[in-house]
Image (cartoon, rainbow, N blue to C red; front, side, top):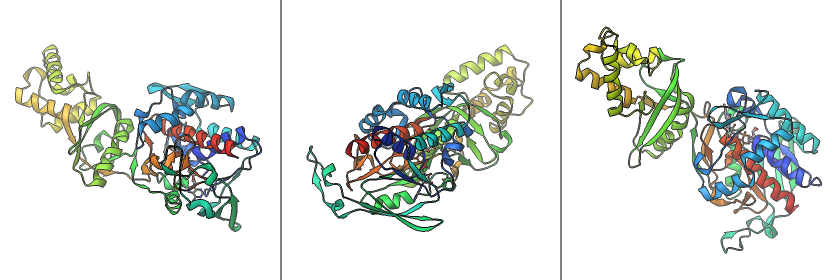
Length: 432
Ligand SMILES: Cc1cc2nc3c(=O)[nH]c(=O)nc-3n(C[C@H](O)[C@H](O)[C@H](O)COP(=O)(O)OP(=O)(O)OC[C@H]3O[C@@H](n4cnc5c(N)ncnc54)[C@H](O)[C@@H]3O)c2cc1C
């Protein structure tokens, strides 16, 4: 079998297929010069391998029942055990994130490659696949047991022809099965440039239009620049016309271009999806981490009464970093020398509006070059979740980010890669 793409999902698929069936000849082709570039930069160079608790609610894109099935086949507990087995023990950090004890993503890549070597999986870099051509039987549609249109294993073609460009020129492989593990479009310099979608399309699949996700937000004006480098907890509310507002809480980092950090990254998918659909969208920020206007007013009045001779910005420091407290006063038009005991009602309410529902002047996101994942891709209903086999082209399997599944920040995207890779690998080992 040929696996196209030696990222997290492709390597997992190859390893689990080889473990279950050592006789299987497995070649993994990757266009990049080195394997695992995305794993190496993940989690700030430490690789957030998975999370202590992973559920379908942590993902967008696919049908939750399909997600549950794939995730249950190789859970976060199994992932943790697998990494321990290959010499990468994990430890838990805040929000349930699991990182290697070494705190180095390199350990994860090295361990996956060592396991491939131990299992005689042939991993070839600088082999960019340019075409995958199915055998004659590939276009024969037969109803499956449930009567749905699709392909049974018996209808698999005898051979795919896989063409790759390598430093030695054009190379061709014959394979009974091909796994597309080419990732999405995020961080294209790592090799995931979206060409996998074109391969999937040629093999009969649809591709849900993609947008960057887990992508920093770009703001207009320069209010944010003065806060560059400051991180604090916030609540962002994404208001998409015609939809219920979505609230996202967590740390947010102010930067020279806008905002980043978990809250902003998790919000970007919704912003990009709405923009792509041409639906009006706006984001408001609650600097007081979810305290609503009434509760914030009550708390501010009490705090001002307790410190009547302090400047208002000093009073706010019990909830906010000093620079954010000062900026909030300025944004609400409050003079810096105003004392807490002399804060007029109107000024207080203006300040509270800034603190609890300030419209973040979002003008876009930074795009695929900075996004951690891609939202959109091959729809899950075109895949059999018990095998990750294509329902459009027999013998083809799809795993990882090429599918229309994207997780929130916290190790969920890698878990999807491990789980979907496992399901495909185990199925291919059985069939072979
Ligand atoms: C900066 C950053 C940080 C991240 N941090 C985390 C984190 O800490 N935790 C987490 O869960 N997720 C994280 N992610 C997301 C995670 O890295 C991805 O979800 C995951 O790597 C997807 O795995 P994949 O194998 O499907 O795709 P990829 O990792 O993108 O691998 C695809 C592979 O296919 C190869 N390829 C593509 N096209 C071809 C072709 N035509 N021929 C041959 N080879 C090809 C590419 O070179 C690449 O090696 C992060 C992403 C980024 C960009």
